[in-house]
Image 1 (cartoon, rainbow, N blue to C red):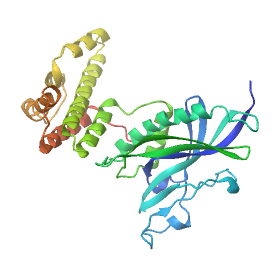
Image 2 (image 1 turned 180 degrees about the horizontal axis):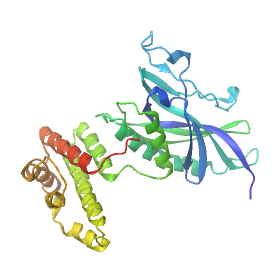
Image 3 (image 1 turned 90 degrees about the vertical axis):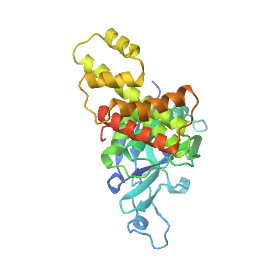
Image 4 (image 1 turned 90 degrees about the horizontal axis):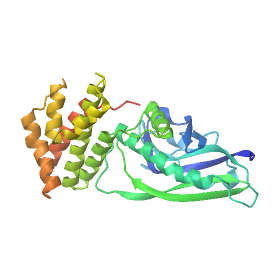
Length: 316
């Protein structure tokens, strides 16, 4: 078995994580693919201790105390900023990882797999963070570079990549930050119905009301079908029968009606659902209809109420 050495490096997040003060300086062991890493979050140095800043520019955060890359080799990093009394953006974290040793002039083995695994891992972190931070996706979406930097044998090895930037509006708690990191390590994605609500919000804010309506309604369908499956499954109903029933039920309106018959309580009437959600979605999906803004807003309102009632999002 090849000898393994501990290497130190940084991850530049493609999307800054919004956190509260309690999440600064935390350390967490995570798994990315086959690699176990020890992450360290930046801290608030003297510049970030006071708020608001005198010059009006958000104060920079400092690297974590256990940042092990020698000073003379340290690349310029934007670790994060303080933008509110209890609101910070984390842009970079330090990490350490055990990798097979390599020749002095060679490239550290495993860094390619680590880099590729990072983007899939962080996408899961990003989705949970977006849901917990009440993220406002905004009309302007852009791409921002992300890089893994590894220090080995007096050299810095860097590999980049890109992900979509989506700016949030509320800081995550320390428990939520740790929860997002661990869920990503387990490959536990944000539930599909909540991911569809995020997609609907993004489309709505970009002015794509047709996509917003379709995605929001899809989230409702998934939540309704999951409720039926869980409810009947708890009664020891055969799985094949449950799956066939859900497939045979004709559309969103019928799924809604079946959930009510199974005991689900909701303040939304069947008539209102049909008029303000189902019919709008069907015209958008099947007739190429572009809903008006108020129609899309009402669909999203109903979708959030239904999904929130049927599929509670864990708080961390």
